[in-house]
Length: 327
Image (cartoon, rainbow, N blue to C red):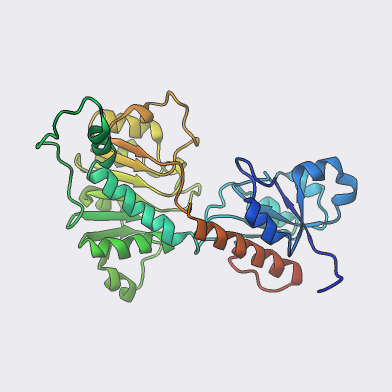
């Protein structure tokens, strides 16, 4: 409303490695009074009671109890992306702070990347590129072969929005689709993509040529894929992770790849990110790693920002919060 003070919203910073994009900040400033962490720490006495929301981009600013204690009028934390493993929901709830995320706008791009990783790994695109551009290459070897995706069996662990969109894409490749999820999808949804539910993860692992992880990181999914699970997979199978690095026991994965327990891995996520430059995963030819770019397109990042803005506006006006995260 004209003449009314804009709500004060805390952000980490603008620009730089983890900051709010400058064009996003320009848009947000039409709706909010943005306060960077630096500005807040320099003028905490005045700003502490003014700030009513936190705009959390790239998991920053980090929210700990000390910060919550200093913001008595904080109503909502809007966090970008799907994962909320960086937030202590119980702590925020004790302070009466609501939480939102952006699960649906990221699903299409993340599913696209899952398919891209599957294709790149199976057809050995990174290795092929290196052969094609190497100054030492005199001919292209006729026996340099990849594996087919069309008609192969894909096992999806986590059939939420992202997992289901992967299944939709895999159907176009005439893949046999298996899935495991906390809750079985209804028959119409299964039929639409030709998906078969596996009540036991073990059954899915033993049958799949590609195992794709699209689960949330929770205590139950922490190191969901370890030595035992990897040994259940086919020696010709590929593991694809577009969820969170900690869903996989990385030491067990390195061992499995080195000893040819599984054929390959394609990872958009690791732990930590980035990996130490001497990490063994970076030295293996049967591994593709991308820098956590599941949602990294201009359109999706813009939609994430708009979703977060709408959630903050709803949270501050007492309206239902889009994509509210509930305990």
